[in-house]
Length: 563
Image (cartoon, rainbow, N blue to C red):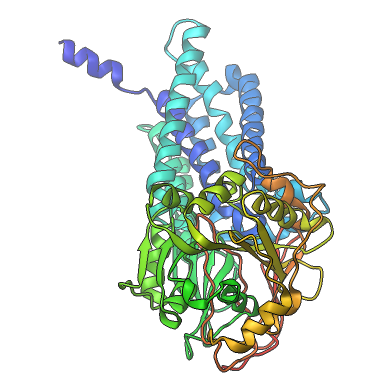
């Protein structure tokens, strides 16, 4: 008898089930929103703040409206209709989400607020519908007293939100595509509508359920409307950290993370440099007193792993790679011909964590974990720079690939990083990779050796050393001082990365194709989810913009299309 009574107490009534599912669906959609919005607007704190704010506002408005109507309209059938409306809107998100994102990207808003129209249009209505459920359920509750009824509803809704958050984060996103997750939440809403209407569901109700289910399945089966990137999709998945795609455009294979290109490979000549800036990665072999002084190298960020592969094949070095995203590692092995060996070791861990835990000493650390819209702040601070310094040999160097402008308001991140590296290393040099003042790759070289290496000395070393590539053109951009008085020193307790990146939002990021050189054989393009450098894969011989918007525009100027 006691067991039966306990089971009866645990059995949810239909209004209670509705509240639980509304919590699961609302929080699941909120987590999913981050994945859908990021390719167009990035995943900065402004984007996530907008997502949280819009969801709270929509729920609050639904609570208020539902509370006003509950006494007159609350019923299981009315809640069933709300769940069907939610499922119908989710079908729209699955089918036309990319189109709606592009439609809302042109509003003349400050960059910090650029994502708000998209978030509101895509996720405001379904969240608003779900907001009605709690006050309706409270009105229908069997609990005695307003306090008991409202407290019970709050508890069930919160439990549902916890389930939705953990299930979406740890189970659904790593396992399913955006379309599949949307379909799952839509079918969950339809199933809840059926449970609320049973056992007395009428013909109209049956037809409504069938119609919404057909629309959901058709939307998921047809795929998203529009084409997000050009080319043939070779592989696509959701990783624990980002959306990942491998795209082939002619002979060029590109790794896309969160809709942005990060690493490219020429399938007909896998060892060719594809982008001009990747040739700067060889600079440390000129800064070293002797190129043979560099024996062990650590790359922070993997991406397509072409950088680590080049170093392992070109030089007599042992290369370690710290890549936080396990799927990026698997994809690099499957689609970018990466093979571990005695000279190429891959570690599935974050860069800072790896440096804390390793007892190895490195001659060179290559930090290739930043991208234009998303920079892991823990890899930018003076504490990180000091940790890197501690893991370097006496003549060791830190090489950082930064995306920023070399001057003007959009240079704030670059100059803050320069200032921070200066606090940990006696000498810091920089090499902008484009002659203009636009957003570009800027290569920073920080040395533990306090002796200044001049441009003339670097040119002399370039003439007499055989490092596999002629860097005379790259040395023209040599810089050894920057104005840093107006930018912060980045620390663990204060690293306003999003504010520093904000002036770059809406500006084009230009990458030139590399000119063919006899000894320049492979693109050193690395990027991971601990970060990943935002790199551009242009198709053929024309400049094009990938997912251009006021929030994010990436242009590749292909000056050379041969090879």
